[in-house]
Image (cartoon, rainbow, N blue to C red; front, side, top):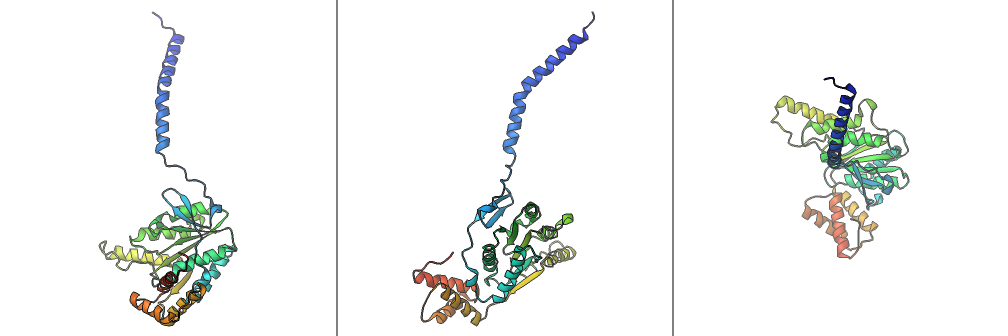
Length: 297
């Protein structure tokens, strides 16, 4: 018996159509499930909403932050550091050549406060200037962040507070990659600012369980990162005169009056076992609370 080829083709076509019809709902459900499992696309950054932002590398989001409340003029005892940092920042805001900055020195001397207060002061005149703060544990995400910011019209200060490389050379390599920019070069609209208690960003107890050669290579990798900062600004320990000048400056700025200001400030420092801008500010907060006056956070 002879088979009709046209009839066979029609039957095959009907079978394929029936299978497609049966599979279509299944394929649709699979596609919808994959869509739900896929990470959401990050929203377009709304950099017009604020001047300060925190970056979340997990989602790619930029979260607005309130303006920094401490005026630049209230930071005393760091006049030289203030002038040098502000000069570099103003150049960057105007589109002139500027250097990535490392603010290093003993704790509590005002490194972070200066970085944020100086930015707030300069950004009041340069509205396209934005600050993006990143956590030191997220340094490995910096190359991706810089690539995102590169295409923007705004100019960005990327701030990493209390930077150090506790986990070896991986973070150091990521930071070097971000600052050098690979084949495309570093973004012209990004200025990186880091604060650290250590001039070369290295942990005090460098790991030795990888052997002397590997440890030495990690140390070289980490020390070489500090060379990428063209501007180093040191914050030495405060002597007594500078500490008292800071206390008096804060007291004058916030109109706090007491007849024994110096004596009480020195007693406060003695109890804390340190003299620094942070200790001076903590004393002023205590004095303001005593006198029932409000201060910035």
